[in-house]
Image 1 (cartoon, rainbow, N blue to C red):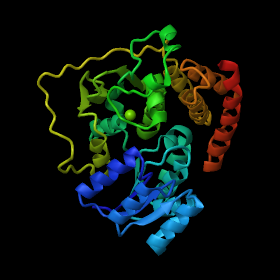
Image 2 (spheres, protein in one colour; image 1 turned 90 degrees about the vertical axis):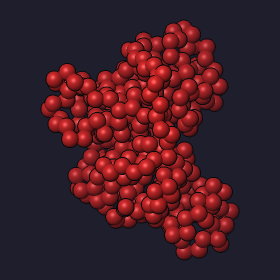
Image 3 (cartoon, helix red, strand yellow; image 1 turned 180 degrees about the vertical axis):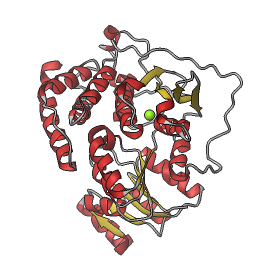
Image 4 (cartoon, helix red, strand yellow; image 1 turned 90 degrees about the horizontal axis):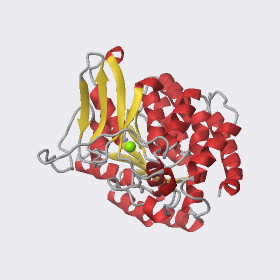
Length: 380
Ligand code: MG
């Protein structure tokens, strides 16, 4: 098995990736995180052969890691990028935020398998990541449950025999609420996701359906389907992760418990399968329901399709504006219903440009953040 580098190792996906790697006895050769936390030190002790990268340590963290780990540790954002570029590895990129893009590009340019869990890489930098894939001859495999499901449904199938692909959405904690009711929801209610346990931003993005908008854009870049061939259906049980409909009227669905260790493992071992960590799936007694998304109450999904179709920097602007709006909501500066308002106004204000480099993506990101911040006050 190819050795693995885990970036974003102390986050939810990173920790589960290490659990899967340890379970399958895959050598962990690199571990990266933003901060030199106690959790990272524990991971370093448990993986004595791994190089450790700390992107943004405090002075005290740097001293302590150096004292205990010596030559094995490196610091600064470059330390993560260097590990991503170590050849012959599978690089699981679970970095949160746009800092993950450079690592994705480095991994693919080095010809590595990139197991991608960093949303921003494809949402904000899709064209740049695809260029790196072409240049380096690496391999891009998804970690996200819906995209892993599509990836698995599409194995052995021809692109021109696919009518459409369908991503499922749990609908989040506010499924069924009207636009009016959504105006009064609280931060605590939004953070209480019914089926998946995730970090705060992605949990809010799931509640607004922006997360599904991002996944539509990611599916476009991962599998090459036009936006007209990517649909979303609400499926509250989160058991069917995606479906592919073929031109002959057949559908393939991918089912599994909502347990991220399943798609993480497939990203590391696929197309080979090994004994996994999840419990066996009990089929009897299951009820699976599907309903159309309410795009009036949840306008973020439509905004995602719009930005995706515009292409260029528009999805990067969508992502940056959403991040600003979500943090303002978490800080109780704006209401839940103002999130799409801030995003829509920012998309309208920022000029769409082509993306050719990581720097182009960062420039679009900075511009969108500044403009989105300006819209916060007006939308309260
Ligand atoms: Mg997902």
